[in-house]
Amino acid sequence: MASTIQVRVDDELKQDSDRLFKDLGTDTTTAIRMFLKKAVASNGFPFDVTLGDVYNPVKPMTEDEFLSKLQKSREHAAQGKYRDADDVISDMRKKYGL
Image 1 (cartoon, helix red, strand yellow):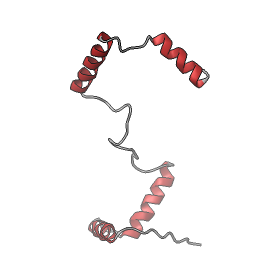
Image 2 (image 1 turned 30 degrees about the horizontal axis):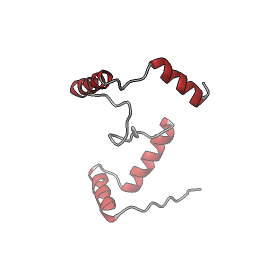
Image 3 (image 1 turned 180 degrees about the vertical axis):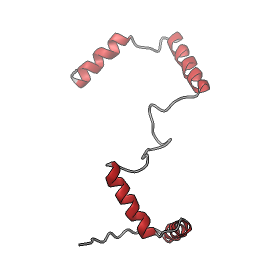
Image 4 (image 1 turned 90 degrees about the vertical axis):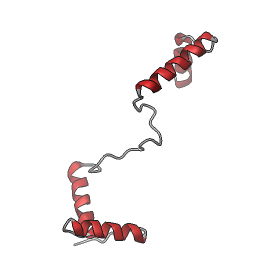
């Protein structure tokens, strides 16, 4: 038994994908079937799925970005804008029940 999957996409995306897959020697339906088989075989998306630059709290910084943040931290410390690490840890333990 075969199942049908219907997906709505805008006309331009459909035309672009049809053209691309034709150039690759296949069609969009076969390409979608290939995607599904690869996803099942790899037990996930067959490519990285990320939020890109939208939100990444641990994205690597350039050296200039790092030095700029370090300088800002030093300025804050000189102005007394800092908290003792033990106080921060204590507050986190209380807040999160650690």
